[in-house]
Image (cartoon, rainbow, N blue to C red; front, side, top):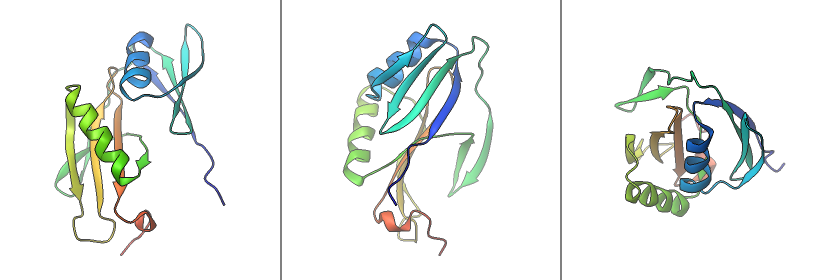
Length: 140
């Protein structure tokens, strides 16, 4: 069965900054919008930035493979080459990585490339890629 697109709505404190980040830096095409929200196409998934001038980042983390992973976070699983291209583009743009691009669980089941960064409103994003996509949900 083909994957169905997911929908995620999240708060941002500034729609112009969200438009520059998601539309410009991440290259997400823009869909419908108003003065209160913007739809973006995140690789076939609908994400919606909703204006909340009081939006503040959440500071919770959980330890994963030696890193403090921000919770909540969202992102997309990319193919290996697309992940590396995005990591290079973000680094060249001076993005401040909360967790720099690296390989997690190296040599183990579920080996993956991962990186974490925040949007201008402090929402945490993770983009990852698997050497073997068949291990996406592998437990051992």
